[in-house]
View 1 (spheres, rainbow, N blue to C red):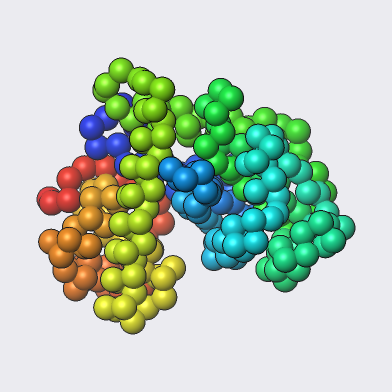
View 2 (view 1 turned 180 degrees about the horizontal axis):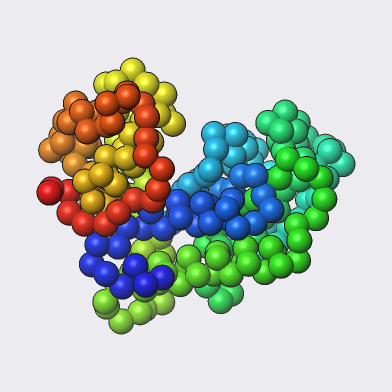
Length: 249
């Protein structure tokens, strides 16, 4: 939250940090974040694995599943045994089980009574999420929305939250385009392109959103990004969260 008070606050890094904290601090194996756009539709903003991304997209395509139920009903949804919910969500549960997930827990991303998305937690084992983890997960989600609200020096207005959400979604679209550019240019997978992009931003002390914008506007060449990778390969990455600062330097 303190980071959002600085001029170089990176909203994309905030969502990545949220799922990193969820998988590190909670008894879960994967996590994802979905947020509503101006039309009231959910979009995936960050996820800890490709399986989590695809499971969220599958729910969006079928307008069915725990994530959608949590969003529409504005409450936490616990599914301690996915195998028992085949009839309720026939399009979603088989894929989740095939991806290795046995239980799922979804909680609202909210500001007071206003729900703007969901945080989705996946486990490879059946069973309930520990009570302390439930509280911590909601606290992390609430802190994330509060951080987004602080992403401005202007006085808050009723439509500020939606405006900021749309700015984040626009930034996410730019990031996806940048990943596509790197993937095609370097003939690498999307996950590898994403890691390469994050590594470059970290090593340069730059915001991920600024690097993505520079790539999509052709002010930064893909070769430059790959050339900055460690000597053992363009597809490798350095662990850690994105730094902050300018694109240059």
